[in-house]
Each structure stands twice: as structure tokens, then as C-alpha cells.
Length: 266
Image 1 (cartoon, rainbow, N blue to C red):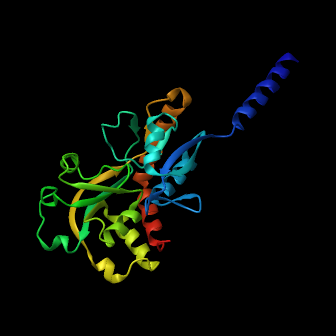
Image 2 (cartoon, one colour):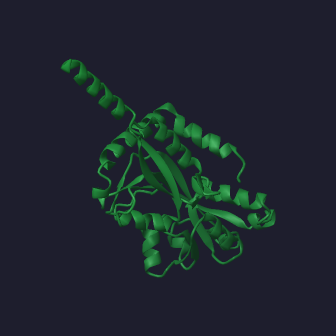
């Protein structure tokens, strides 16, 4: 009798454990970086967010909740230990408050300038671009150490906007000379602006590709501070890394990128 009762208790306990809902893990995501990560009608959209949605379904005991925020705020939340994860940072060793997932995509950085700026040859980066005013997404640090040293010295002037669209509109309207970001993001947003009638074909034709730089890899960043609030984080990272690597091997990430980009810009 006792053994029967014990068996029933253990079976009930096992059933309760099996029925436990997965833990929701908040990942803050950039709300202004199309086509990779952006917000539309309160929902996280874009290539990287679709990758993370599929990864979420493959995790055991976890589900990812994507929460769009301005990029600079996302960095601050992670630095303060108020959020467990942020997507999609580039690797920057000076951000000692952040750990990184396995890289899951390679971006290609490019410089676009007004066509009149490029009448003179500028083959050397960033030496031939000194004295110019560059747009930059707030919280981003592309372009390499020499570029940012020139900014620090005042040899290159920086004018920041919250997102890619804001910077491209400043470039088209002559408020900045050049803009540096991922090439695909620049072309995607220009297509969207022209499609909506915000800029004309003539205005777009007034821009020129000025330089092609080394690529950057995209990661999910993890908080190194405040981990007492996220005791599950090490296990979550281990699982997410394994899933991302599996998706890369299967070609799923490349397929998601192609499928997302095939849709017309919103």
C-alpha cells in the first residue's frame, strides 16, 4: 500500500515538473536597424529577430521574449545589469560588462557620401575623409580604431541620430557629408524611403558608395553584471550557442535572411 502511494506521489511530481512552463528570457533588440532588427506596430521585426524566434522554439526549458528598444538604451540596460541579453551587438572588448554568444551572421560595412564629396578621389580610409561630417547611429562604433581616434581628435566630426533612416535623411538633405553602416541596411532603407516617396530617385542618385570596409559579426550580448537576477543565464547561453551553431550548419540562418529580404520593404 505504501509503495503504491509513493509511486502515485512520484508520478504526480514528475507530471508537475514536466508541465512546468518554459522560462521567459527577455532579449532587448534594436528598434531602428532594418532590415536586421526594427520595431513595427510594437513588434520586433527583421532578420535577426526571425532567427531568434526560430532559435527560441529549439531551446529546452526557455523561450525568448523579444523587446524592441533604442540601441543606446539597450546598451545602458545591459551595462547596469537590468536586462539579461541584447541583440545584435558587434564584438567590442572595451565593453567589459558584456559577454557574447556564438556569432551568427556577417555584415559588410560601407561608407556612403554625397556625390559632390566624392569628386575628389578618397582611396585611403579614414585618412582621406578627415574634415568631413559623418552620421552615426547612436551607440554604434563602426569604422575601426583609426576612425574613432580621428573623431576623438576632432579631425572627423560626428553627428548622431537614433537610427539608419534618420542618418540617411540627413545625408540626402546635405546635413552630413557621409554615413557609415552595414551596406545591406543602407540600401534597404534607401529602397524603403524611395518606395514611400520620402526621397526621389534624383536625391538617391546624389549619393555615392565611397568605401567598403571589413565586415562585422552579429552576436547576442549577455550581461556580466547583475547575474544574481539571472541565475539561469549560463545554461541559457550554452543552449542558445548550440542552437545557433546548429542553425548555421543546416543553412537555416541564410534561408531566413533570404526569405526576409525577399519581402518588399515596409
